[in-house]
Length: 383
Image 1 (cartoon, rainbow, N blue to C red):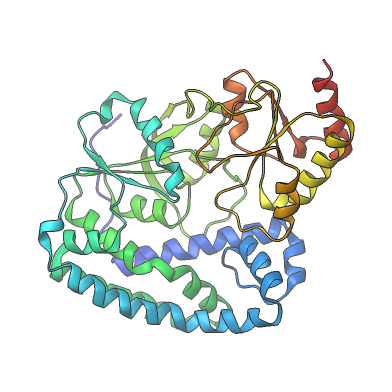
Image 2: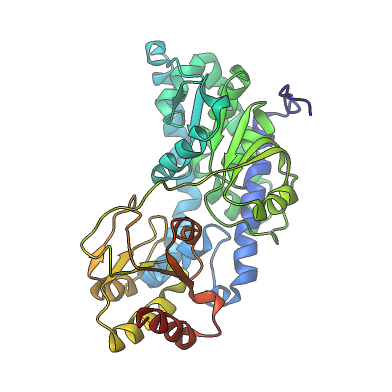
């Protein structure tokens, strides 16, 4: 196998990001395909649809006004970012010496990425940072000339979006909320193709920009892969994928030309808590909250098992969150992997970690209904 990294085709930054946003919109279309009930809400843009449902229910009649304002707010905020970046670009002393960069979708995933990197000895020659996406940092790195080029590319991106039909135009405008930082990221990669970039993004805008820009980059699996997404643009190539199990290799290969796979374990051990030996740990996910509430009610009606709860750190919950919290004996923070007797989720990727560490796990989605899941869990508690 050829181990020399090859540079992706030289495509303008605006075009790379436009394609990334088009692909990300496909994720929302796929979500609506899998959850057709969200269309019953009406008037939702194809932008983080799950969060839009919660926001519309919270705002009621004001929701339409908020979306209307956001269409103008995103470009206006871009102008503010241009000014801030031009000022920050003058402070070249802020430049860092790192030649490896962790680009994370969520701060609580940084340790996951570090665990994957630690499993591979080829990463020891790189010095990694995890703040490259900071606007001021990027501006200082690429300098005034780089920032001016990015402003021009950002204007070209906005022009392309405004030329679309109304529905797609609104969707892409909302998706472009952090477009300027991503264009600057592309500029930085163009200036430093010898650096190594690592992300846990599977197929959103971060990974697309890396695939179209960086000769050296690696992907870390953080969750399930949906094999049914139909992307508008080919995702590209990734030299290395750190996967959690060999069963996912084919799913990644559906979207990327993968150089090689390396499997890793994300969690070395579990965190202590007052109910580590006896508790039922529920890893919550907002789309399945009704099933979770029903399940815990059924179990509490028949058992005194302590409930350990972790609210999904990236999901926007509605008032039902309080109902779920009220049934918990211990609530975890975003970084905890609590020790427990039983792990329960609707279909959480954390199940792989708990299985690896020898815990009994249950996924509600794999049962015919909540009653069947509760019955199976109760059978295990009674043994």
